[in-house]
Image (cartoon, rainbow, N blue to C red; front, side, top):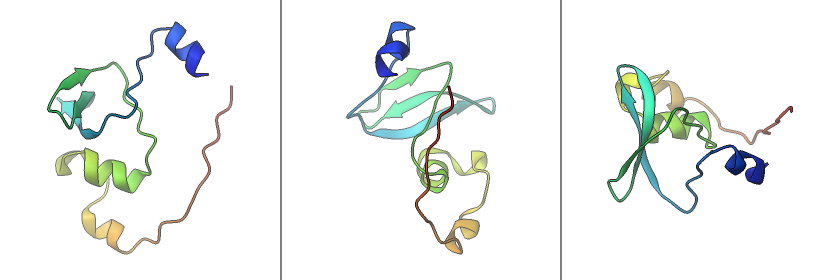
Length: 84
């Protein structure tokens, strides 16, 4: 899958700490790396769980749920299923 995606122009950031998802006019437009570098993309996919992605990578105004919502949740492992 990785090779096919790369063949079609997908760019993967591996071993790169992502500091935040950059949002402009309500739309995710890129990522900011821990180095401070901002990289623009057409689509951003986070493979982390929703709680971490929202609370750690998005500014509060773009989060789906407030921090109080997550405090009462018990996180459990889940599966990632991809249908091709």
